[in-house]
Length: 566
Ligand code: TEU
Ligand code: CA
Image (cartoon, rainbow, N blue to C red; front, side, top):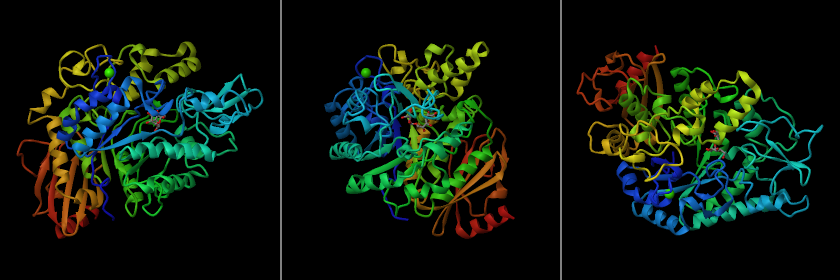
């Protein structure tokens, strides 16, 4: 497999609104990030992915862009951006921006012109259709509740918005629109930006007959109806030809709706489309048919199977990310670990999983200190448009049977606001994030969980992350080694082998509260190299949520593997 800098890097995602407020308005900003560039360097990250920082009315907190060439007023100025980029590059940290081009904000001048009349030159920068039988053109449902069609009285047509009504979908069939997007991409790349994380990129190409579809299972509808449209690969190959292929930059596709079977069409190194993909198999594992607020049970076995099937899909000539959280999902230690009983152990095991699997590890702000889900009591504490739209929709459907407390309870476990509370820097007011009440409540546990009380303690999640990133960087086997995953005890004990030449790294992970003797799964020459437990306990024993990494010879591994498999 070809060596690339973006395969050997660790990515750290910042949600700027919640990272650090430098000017006391309660909202995170670019100067706040500049203040923390040494913190990022010290943590050991190589690439910073910034969620959108462009001008936006913040209906969806920046994922609704009204000017792709301006920095959002609340986040600062273009001079601040230039300084941030320079400070990052000085520290050999690359910057990846969030490219949101499936839709713009309805306040973008293109849309303002497009909606004035049917023959405005910008009309088909967006997707307008006549209604049908006095209603919308079809039965498609928005990611954020309700129909994907919004009626415009002025021109008596509907426009398409797969997300909120303030996020009209751009019409990628329009060559002029595509050229405008490519020009904008060049503007940022010519400033020295090192790549893009591409928001919902599989949705760009629409099935233009806009036929009704089966909306009963939303995840299926996304894959079969919204994503992987007829011209998606043509558009991405054109984007590569016109822009990305001309720079030494990374393109990271947010692969919503892409199944493992067809992922290679997007990220095969011979495809000249995008470099790597975020997959969602594990991130939708607890989403019922109606999405995240309709949760369902899942098993650890199913969780591990997702990584097995995606590694099989990508291993020949493609590449992916390994992540367990971002700004759209609950906190990983609350969701996939045991924050109640084994907060340190499960947070550090999950961090190790992210860093030992094949793919570019992607960390999310706050997970490096074990930030946990919120326990909001009032609907008014939430900020996410997805929360409010779903709340309204469920209240309308259920009428007086709607149980607001139950809804809030589910949102505290599955909602996106969990990942958007302010970064907890120290135990001072507002967790050191801001001098004033922030735009969203700080998690009430900030005096226990914060950077300040972890960074100097040898046994803390933050200190562990630093050791882990250093450990990973010491050996390229974690990037390019072959990978095999084993289920040793269903839903509890798993092993991952990484193999390069005659060297084998053998990772045993205990995703449970039980304890195990593991000599059955070790060889005579197994040598412990790393663990999330401090105690120099018997190497042949794993405590609750303990992960241990061993080195062994290839011969030992082969005989061990045969004994496991037979
Ligand atoms: O998210 C798209 C996506 O993957 C959805 O599944 C998303 O997780 C949403 O929460 C559905 O429940 C991207 C951005 O990451 C997200 O923040 C934006 O809201 C969305 O696109 C629209 O731009
Ligand atoms: Ca601010």
